[in-house]
Image (cartoon, rainbow, N blue to C red):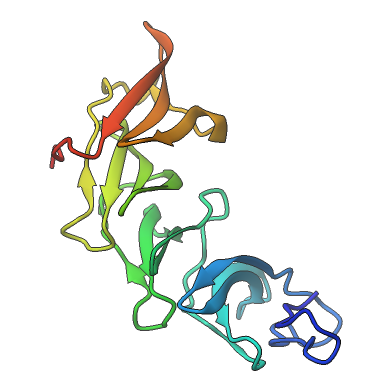
Length: 207
């Protein structure tokens, strides 16, 4: 199944035959970015295996292009906030945060938070002008980070008790919510149990 670019009989056509022949790209839309549709598609790499990669397409004019050769971390998902899309890419040291403005040159690593080990990002969420995400650090354990789309604006904002082996921020979508100026998320602590934490946008970053 290949992505299509319009919903009229005259304008419905394949945007791009990403995987030529009878095989499918398994494309699915993520959202609108810069007036174009951002979507994920499987691309056959040189080894003949499928990689999940980020693409963008025009409508109604047919055509789409890949935003890079990076391989998406499927479990993390993609969050669009304003003119930027945030996602995780599987690298040599595990998932790291990336950002895209819908162009190939504007798609890049946001920050290599743990150069020597995995960052293990689980999700991204929109929080006003910020995008917050859960990141597991081998020393600090699960913590909440925020980003404005720049490396300098990617900052640690929570101080969840550090116990990487036992304390973790929930990955369930029902365990996180924005209400007013506060982002709420649930933390599972072996002593206190499953409890609700809140981060205010006015709270300064830890680093």
